[in-house]
Amino acid sequence: MDFYLPIAEVSVNAPLLIGLGALVGFISGLFGIGGGFLMTPVLVFLGIPPTVAVASESGHVAASSVSSVSAYSRRREVDFRMGGILASGGVVGAFVGVEIFRILRLLGQADLVVSLSYLVFLGVIGALMLTESLGAILRRRRGDPPKPRGERRPMWLYALPLKMKFPRSRLYISVIPPIVLGFFIGILSAIMGVGGGFILVPAMVYILRMPARMVVGTSLFQIVITTTVTLILQAGRNQTVDIVLAVMLLAGGVIGAQLGARASARFRAEELRALLAVIVLLVGLRMGLGLFVTPEDPFVLMSGFD
Amino acid sequence: MAMIEAPPPAVAAALTETEVQVTSGFQGARIIVYGAVFDPANRPSDVVVIVRGPEQPIRLARKSRIAGMWLNSRPVVFEGAPGFYMAASTRPLQDIARFGHLRRLGAGLDHLAIAAPAERRIETRYGVRDMVVSSLGADYLDWRRAVVRLKQKAGLYAADSTAVTFVDRDLFRAEIALPTQAPIGTYQARIILFQDGQPVSMRERTLTVEKVGFERMLYVFAHQRPWLYGLVSAIIALAAGWAASRAFRRS
Image (cartoon, rainbow over the protein chains, first blue to last red):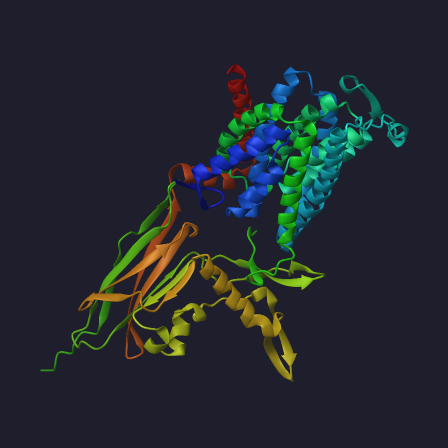
């Protein structure tokens, strides 16, 4: 059953799209991630203009994150104050990111920057996660005790001004690092069409030293706010949001996410992380590969004229 | 009494459809051009059908290898390119008429008036004043050919020298295949009768491709009130996510 998307102006196979939404939803539920980094490349591969894919995907990420946040907040695992501070940086970042994307599009360099961002960020994060999780699996196999987590917080975090209390996370730190982090994630979210959880979560654990229990819920809360703002900005500035596409992805996504969350209980955490690392690494390499393979045609038509 | 002169040859034509409606089930459309040639003298006739979609500027970039990576050049804007173009004829165009006629009528992919005006400069060269040169230089033809080639690949440009067929003595038909990504707007179909290498009669028909119903509503909303559309989209997305979590919580 083919379905015509009014903004993307292409026809897509609706069951296929809903099925893909469910599959990505399953993966996102399984690993506790947004799944934007998987969905955006898949949409582009299906022939949806990249600009529309990136913009509409932010609607999909916002929706699936809302449904997860409400589950985490019932378990009191969301630090709303920290999430709000991160989001304040994120919103500014989204503004900047949408403008950067617009300029890149006019210069004809949007594809390059999107591919490079995927290659660098997913490649690095995937490689780090893979070594860390394989190390954990090997240690467990050999029966070694788990590596103690460094409890010492970096001093510079305390040397900065504008300190604030975050009772839920039991932190008393400067608001500057979370604002800068949020700003950076906001830019990425606009350019790559992702929520940014894959960078935010490790950064909150290793830089902000938040309790592991609070990290996922809080990052999802910040992602909801940032991607919602990105969605509105993309619609207002670029007219590239296809709500029909977003709703279709959502329909499959929410079901997949719930099934994934249930399935995740059957796996060990480090095995899941290793699997996720492999997926992240493969997506990054696949996106980056396009830059190095000789193109079929040396000329390309640029989408989005204005 | 003077001899009654035979009336000049003429062509008549019509389209099976003059309005194509784009709905959620839109998968492209096939429109038949049919018509007749009236010529008491029965001279050999050729019919050329040219369909042009609404004009759309094109941005084209060329990839080149820099430090092992394939990077885009600065995009070049081409104007005069229709969003859809089809040239159908009874025989290869170059057998039907001379270059000059084809060029004037814009008949055939080689005769589309595609140009990159922003790249044009007027200079004095070799002592000749007001020479028009393009900053694309000698590669200009490669660029122009690339526009046509890429549009052809997307199914938006086509030329077929056998697509107009005479089904009966003076009755002909041709088919216009509109792909899903055919642009919205007004299309011009020109049906030209050639005899002896000369265009002797021409008919023009218009065809509109428009979005209707829900698709049109969304499209117009998104382009005319983009901020409000964004806000509504955000509310829909958030509400859907929240509703989903409520539904699964109960089960």
